[in-house]
Length: 329
Image (cartoon, rainbow, N blue to C red; front, side):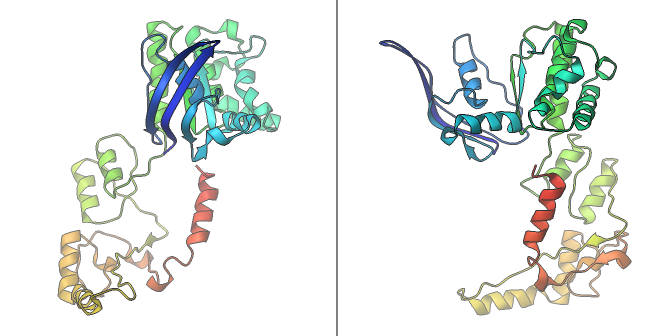
């Protein structure tokens, strides 16, 4: 969960007068969600935005951003959160008029002590992504409203934020520019990494056209789905991981004899054969050698077999390597 808001209240005071603009607001936002906050003028949209963007810390309730309790942070810590975890896009663009598009985009990196060459490279790549490759040296007054907002979007992305807050980003744009900016937002959101809670999530979303690639276990159903939906099932040339679907008996658990009998039942050759047929496994994927599964055309000579006893022994090393590869994202 990237955002958790729980019973947030906000009251403005002016002498003896009090105006409560937010009352017991609670909601959650998961990674990859595209959320719009809507309401009439004066309903508290901007106030809620300021709290979410760590611009206003004077409120009651709980606000958790990317696992961090925002209410417990100092002003310096809030400033660091805004610079590293949040991207801002404003209705009025907020571009510096004397700087070029490239210089405006790279500006947040100046405060992060990123070398100049690296700043230029990253800013140019983002401007190309939003369709301004040939406008990187233009100043804001040389760009249309839609182009200036594209520069603002690129600037919001330069620090690779966890979340982007856009405050009426199309309010000053014509209908054509509005459609173009909303399409950029949609593409950005579609590119967010997705981790399914169910094994079938990647397969179903790839079939539906929501994803270009889905990573799933290799079995007959994967090949059947690929053939039926004009997709391609692929696997690494240098080897396939063999992941056993194990059965475990906990120490000191009740009914140990019954559990052992069930384990013996599962491992009988005839029942392994039945599992191979029901689950659509290749014969090389089965625990009992000689079990005839489906011939999925897997490169059996490159099958990487693991010692089941070693499973979990390298968990910390694997998690560390994964964090390095994904840079903690």
